[in-house]
Image (cartoon, rainbow, N blue to C red; front, side):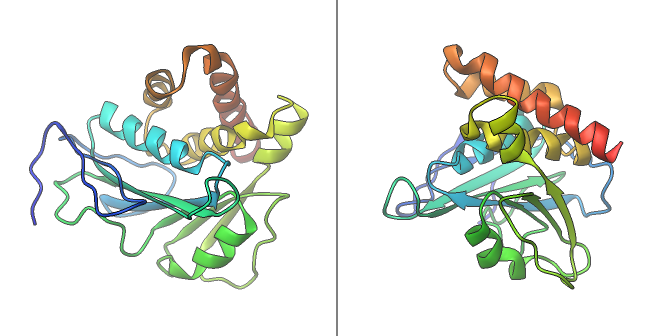
Length: 215
């Protein structure tokens, strides 16, 4: 199957794979040496905003003019069960829309880390994880970066539910895989207006912390 550029297409292949977004454009990434096709998996538990994080990252890619595809998986229970969101960002048209071997894992829970850390590309892979929530394994042949998303959400914003936006803010600031302005636009497109201040503040807090920690 080859997917053409332009527009929005939705695919359904059973529970957990609801959406594919695709558009034409270009891809740029600074800070990491990777190919022009980046496969990203976001993992956590139901209720942590994993699917929302994937939706926002994919939408930001579309806004930036990239080719983007995405899919979601979640367990039978709405909250507390393992779930993941997968996104492909590409400079070129996407022939196969599902993630095969992730380049990057964003982990919001220990179970997600434990389940999927082995799936990454060795030597070039990156695990960006919620520090303080996850105990990373040693001697993995991938790069690992801890980021205190839940700690900042709890102590600074008094709401651990926005840890996903803080982690996303740090990730976007460090990797520049999508622009911060595009992610902010995505927040306003997909989150209710009354929640804009909290979520934008969380995203900004993550970006500012990343600048302080990683320069």
